[in-house]
Each structure stands twice: as C-alpha cells, then as structure tokens.
Image (cartoon, rainbow, N blue to C red):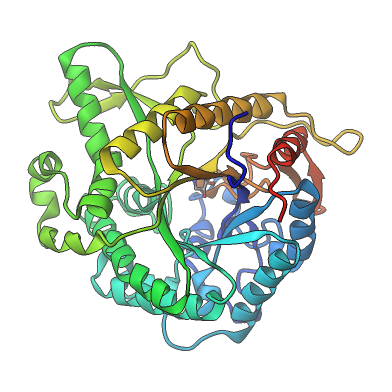
Length: 443
Ligand code: IFM
C-alpha cells in the first residue's frame, strides 16, 4: 500500500472509557460518573467505575501496544483526576499517573498524542454552569496550562477537544450523554465555548511546549442526498451546516456559517457570534473521527427538518452504522479542499461487532478486519489525491465503555473480559500489526 514511511500509525482510547478508579487517589467526580450512576441513563446501568482498570494495568496495556508494534498512542487526560475541582488545587497522584504513563510509552518508543478534553469533565465545574458559561474558557485554559507544563517536555502532540459536536448536541440537545439535557439554546452555547476555549488553549500549549503540534478533533460526516431531488440536496446542505460547517468554519475561518446563523435565529440569542474569530488560531493539524456516512432526506413535516435514511445495500456494524469507506476518502478530500488544514490525522476509525469469546488465545473478527482494510484503502486513495494525511489511529486499543451503550459494544483491537480483566488479541490486531510492520520506519 502507498503510505509514506513517516505515516503515524496508532491506536486511541479515552480516560473515562478505560481507566476505572473513578474516585481513587483523590480523583474528583466527573459528569459521566454522575450520569452513569443515574438509573436508566446508560444501557444496563453500566458505569465507568472499573472499565478496563487501565489506571492499574497501564503497563500491561503499553506492553500490548509494543507487542503489536504500534508506534503512537492517543489517550486523554481525566481532567478531574488532575484537578479534582476542575481548577485550583492539584492532585499530585493524578499528575503522577500521567507522568508514569507517558514515561512508559516513551520507554517503549511509542509517541503519545494527548487529548485534553474527551468528555471526562469535572462535575464541580458542571455545578458552576459548565460549558454553558463563558468562564469555562478560563477554566479550560488553566487545565491546558497545567498539563502542557507538566508533560510538555515529553509530549509534543496535543489535541484540545474531542468531538465538540457530541458534547454539545448529544449531551445538551438530545440528552443521551452527560449531562443529559434537552436544551437547544444551551447546546449552542456549549459549542461556542468549546470552540472559543480551543482558540484560547492553543497558544498556551505552544508557550509551554517547545515544538508542540496542536490540533482539534472533530467528528465529521460525509453526507449523500437520499435522492437527486432539490429538497434532498438542500437537506444535505442543512445537515452539513449543523454537523460539519458549524465546527469547521469557526476553527478555519473564524466565523459561523451564515446560512445556519440565519436559520437558527433566536436559538443563538445571547451569544456574541463575532467573537468566534478567536477560535481560528493557527492549528498544526485537524483530527478527524470517521465511522460512517449519512444519507439525508428532506422531512415532509417541516421545511427545516431532515431525516436519515438507512441504506440496506451495505453491511452495518453493531452500532447500526453503515460501512461506507468511500465516505472517508470523499470527506478527506472535501475538508482539504474547503479548509486547507496543514495536516490531517484520522484520530479515530473503527467498528463495533458482536465478537465471539476468545478461542485458543485469539478472537476471530473477520468483519472488523474487512472494515479496517477498506478504510485503509480509502486513506491511501486520499493520499494519492494529495490530501496531507499524516496518520491514522484505530479506535480502539481495547474494548471499553461505549458511553450510553455501556459495555455492550466492542470496538477494541484487543478483547476485554470485564469479569477477569483478561486481554486477548483479536485477529484484527494481528492484521494491524502486520500492516504497521510493512511500513515501519527505522528509528
Ligand atoms: O467511543 C467513541 C469515542 O469516545 C468518541 N468517538 C466515537 C467512538 C465510538 O462511538
């Protein structure tokens, strides 16, 4: 395959999804702790209290990465583990944990990519208004300052936020994620402050960390119209505005998309939309999380509504997401042409399947292998078209806590037996190992 020799291959995780030890060693409560402990919010009332017990087993997990020859690892910091109240008093045990993790990675020649906000948000700050209030920008800046001072001598790759869309819309508009609100006005405030805080944090990280490469990760969709009708094509335009341009335009152009501002009207009341120019600080890369495409139709019940159409011709994963690798290539080319980021990383891509239990020391997962291979091909095609794609992170290293789905969805390259915490490589991990070995850079 035509990947450049310096292409960065990695795996990704997030703190709440794997660490466990929720209130151990001085860690403060996070919004997902509160949410998952509220009956009925998460499938099976699962919580992240133990998850993959990575807090205690990180050495084993790093050794597994090394065994697979994975040269990079994207993980996130649990903000309330290092600042239990979100700001102010630091937690030495939490800071030490991330020191040890980074050192362990470097000792195994694995390059750490740190995400500051992958939804593990301090409950103490939520109680003060959370991302809905402008002070949240200052709070995030303090946290970014602390972590980049602490780790900046060893960590050079930084991601401010993971998927601000999901925090804002799924957490505050649809209520399926923490904090579980159904408030459209709040959702756009949250998106605004997340984007603004990205703009505030980037120069802080640069100041503290010589040679830092800083970016943001967005979950972006490739959208196709359900038919060739004008109504369906306009529906695509609206969904693109809502899900893609609402986040891309601020980061790369310093403005919100005018068509969306007009159609959202009063929903945006109270926001100083012009200040969003501060979100457009130069970033070194854009992280893109891609899983599936959307097929969009106009909704006959309202001129502004859209609906998603389930395509029956292609396979679907356990998340009921269509397997559509062409969407990844199309999306990469589109984002590059419309926004010209200096570099792009796929910071997440992968698939959940109903895996069998381990047999003879391995888990056979042919559907996941097919998914990955098709998406690697799409990356290769994007590279051939000139997209500055610098790396790819498989989601996820381990089966883990899949948010409102609890432990029912397995995304891992490595199978987690939650009762025993035994890890078993899936066949897809071995296929990924072989792909990486074929492209290995001698360091
Ligand atoms: O597990 C999540 C991850 O935390 C964020 N991106 C999507 C993944 C799969 O749903």
